[in-house]
Image (cartoon, rainbow, N blue to C red; front, side, top):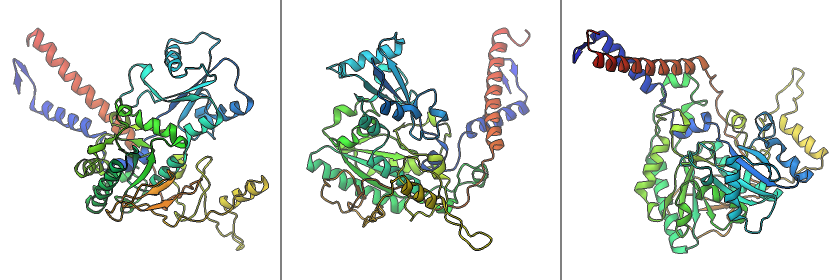
Length: 457
């Protein structure tokens, strides 16, 4: 092969093509997007800035201590994806903190202190620029407002379903107009019913299983989209709703229409469908994207914005717990196992029984909760139901509802023994990718140098 006096051997071209192919495919895999995101993508960290002039009281300091920036990564109790920074307004502020505080003063008209500003992750879609545009929520500091930021009934239920293996949970954010909300609910129900019945998962390659890119038997994966409804004015979910509406630049100006947000993985919002955009064609297209093979394993190269979830994902996803056994609330969740028999025939006390004894000793023993009439919120039909008054109810795509208990318990799906992650294979893929890019750049550079200097230089 010859390009303007520069001769490349055919063997060199073949090798170059192979390296380019390896570079293009090293970061792709056959695991469905929703499952790869659940198992492999860590949640992006939000930052909570607490502006103050006097120190927080002891209870507030104890509440935020596990999440303080300098200790959050090392804290065993910090399961929510947030870092907290306490900013003393008596001291000189950094340029960025000063800019954020000036922006917050416009929202905090009466100058209330302490004041809390919740910030999107800096690598979230659409928020990689100016720090003044990264606010997810803000409010006067209080223990209640902080708790609403890191946890809420809706997010607990969504996390429970995702961990059990549901493909994605579509959050229908009602606008308050009954006609519009009913139309959105009906369209969502019909489309998700069709998606659950017709969409097929891609076949997962054996090499991806061997590389540990999926931790359960692929035969256990299934297409199962469900819905969860919220009213825009639900104060208990104010922080969560604000995170949804702020995930794209223009959503706040469209609050007069219903919106549908697909949440998948570890609480990642893909994008919002609004008003007339909540239709079968668009919904089926979105669902198809979520079950398709993960074409890029690099999370930052994929669209979406994480929301705050108070969940210890790593331990829960890898558990092999009976899905029909109730577990404690999200905060402080750990892996629980069923009792095993000792050599002498006496049963070994399970982690769950040990926890029950500790709760009883501390006076925290809870009354057994009645199981909801509808344990599964899966799509079974296309008929829509009338609006539901309680935002803590679980709504299926079919329109049926089941009242959710105030403290929804996580149920973990029983899965096969996880495949060990072969870090060496993943490492080699990364090395091959980088070497391939390096070789490509070297060849391109050589081409342009020789083109400039001529073949006889």
